[in-house]
Length: 176
Image (cartoon, rainbow, N blue to C red; front, side, top):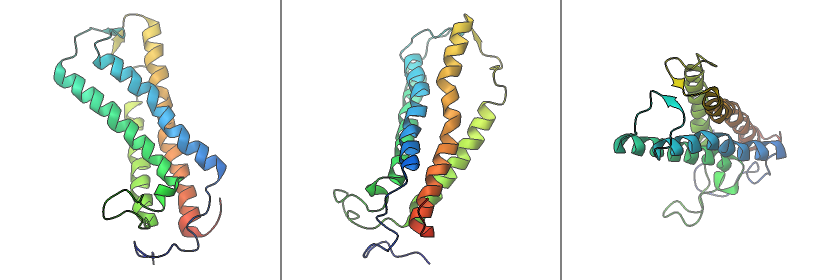
């Protein structure tokens, strides 16, 4: 049985996360950053060697920028699994500030996210290292794209590992 959202912290709350989990959580936003930067250049109209080249329209640019911002924001949420705001809602948030975060309110979305990312990237990289119908003006452009997107393959396992550490610390009662 999980503790209610309000009330005093349980014995398991407040334990420090293991150092490896903190490092892994901080790595998540870094592994999403190269692809986001690549997409922002694409949205800005920079010719990244894609052939046939076509100018990005306003709607496409908005979508690409939005995808980059949302991806980075979701990656930054991983930090909540190792920071105090992942155990207690920050006081500045209206109506919820100061309340205890039920562990499964963080664990369930994190596990779902890790599984979704694994499926998304398994599908997206199914033709790796080839990119299907995408061609480039030169091999350097292909290498750049792969170098920017390859780190994304680490997102799911890093998120899963940090989530496991959070679960161990908050629900299982053990230090990882």
